Image 1 (spheres, protein in one colour):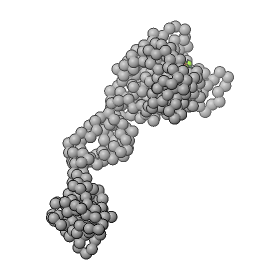
Image 2: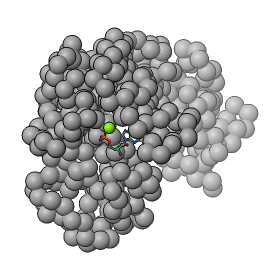
Image 3: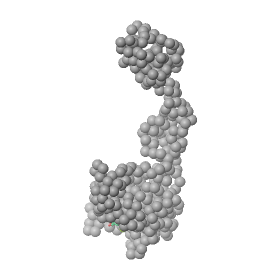
Image 4: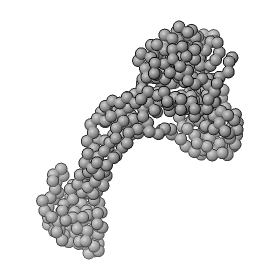
Length: 401
Ligand code: AMP
Ligand code: MG
């Protein structure tokens, strides 16, 4: 076993981000845009709302006419008409002593400055009794109170939420410019691997990584493309990579990323392109490769599922963020208190799987080859390289799955 020339996690991320292909954009319908990364600035095409409007059913009034109104001594106002929805509003001006019926969303008539809810009124012929005072602007949404014409509403680089799709629609967008989903090729390597549908024989394991990586990529807004299992043979590796290069923007190889004689990944990447990083001061996940072939990033992930997953989250995610043009990492995190001491080695960044219960985070010490800690845990606690472990009772930030 030869030694790896390890770099820090920060250096590895910088190296990965530097080789990220630039953002490619496409236009999608707004109702299909949730979860996609916005690629254009969105401004308000007009004032929203476009007119002063009532937010309740009631009577549009001059607020000064309702001063002191009560059940016992209501204000008496004359109706000047009714506001009809979806029309230009009332053609009359509300003068002192007058009011007009107005439904929710109706245009506030000129002269009125507030709306009394219908519950506090009583109609008696063409007179309306108002039993509660309203202040200036009460129950009224002002023109441009939501957004002003020309105002920047969203900058590029955010993941669009369903609520934001609503705002995009309110601004007149049927379609919106978003980052194209990166196509990510996944190649599983190892003579011992068998497809999921087969029962492993002696010394064999099912290919769990491809499904795990693909599931995460799917959820993160990429299009995973599975290229199956390749044996630890140079030709098979080269063939797999060639095939993936023809359709993918990024290639992930799982397994064979260390420096053992049977580990092909680094040699093949070096022969076809360049190996930029081989070895990261991260645990689990040290034998990781960052390379590039024909302008496309090719990442060699360790075969152990837990290691592969940690490297996916810690190193590959920032690379994909850059390909998507995401303005800032969108990790779900929460604060918790460690229930036990967690040892770690100074000089490498360690990612410990933890289970979160209430405010407490319990470390699950598992070997990186184990799958069960991945599913029994709720997330990871990152221990920076400068630390020699964390003590029980420390406040930590958990990166939630
Ligand atoms: P390697 O990184 O190729 O040395 O593999 C390290 C360990 O991870 C070995 O025990 C492999 O059997 C296991 N492994 C490699 N690839 C996969 C995979 N796709 N699914 C599950 N386990 C794997
Ligand atoms: Mg292997």
